[in-house]
Length: 103
Image (cartoon, rainbow, N blue to C red; front, side, top):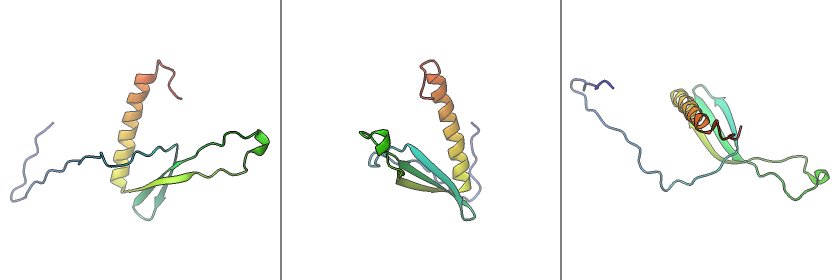
């Protein structure tokens, strides 16, 4: 990687991720993405627990997905998100291609 030169008279500030140990790990099995406003993307993660212990006749007519988190991204952050998620999914698929995977 090329070394970045410090611009004349400008202070360079490093940025690093802090620890994520205190963040809750939430499981989502549904995702809703929309483009809102002029310049933002809304990602809403949700969870749906399928009904169990019912016969087919007792199934409800409507199941509701419980929203658990909403993330709003700038267009640049969305581009990075899509790129990184694609790369990670490709690596996952390559590791699991001979194991049957979950496709």
